[in-house]
Image 1 (tube, rainbow, N blue to C red):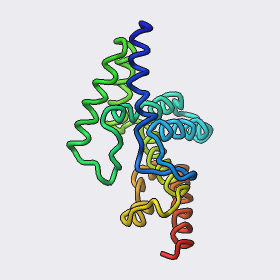
Image 2: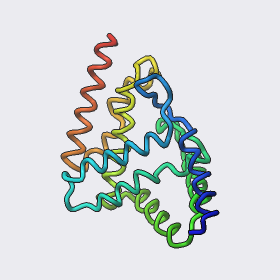
Image 3: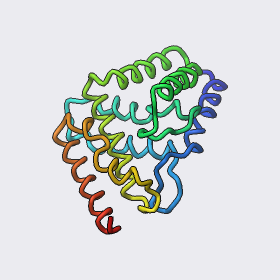
Image 4: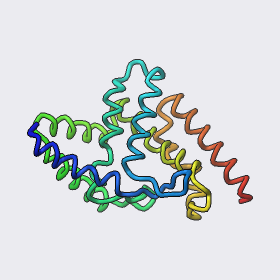
Length: 188
């Protein structure tokens, strides 16, 4: 890869460190998109032993790249995202990865296609973890950062995606129990 193109690409995805998500950190500031992707990749790495037949390196790559489009579009919370937003994000992904050399661009596009189709176990694990990471982040944040809709959303979000394996189902249930306890302590 040409050094100048390499730097240009890094300059574009640097915006993932600047663009914030709807989630807040335990220290009381908004989480960046990059922070979400980083922890999601760590989650995938740490559960590798649970999935010995999966290509965990592929899952980690999916976790790292899944929000590339948000370098341009910014984050739109899942409960607000519509089809127009999805289309805009797909166009942004195309723009971001167009900066890469053909082989790298093709590999990343293949991963995005695989994530969108959700047919492989690697894509299913990535998506389940993506949903669960958001819930863990909400549980870590002060409950004052939650909007009213989240008291219900945080109990049900990602349920379907976590059902594909016993381990993600159990993880989702543990996170749900943490959420119920957080709401109970708040007296709601």
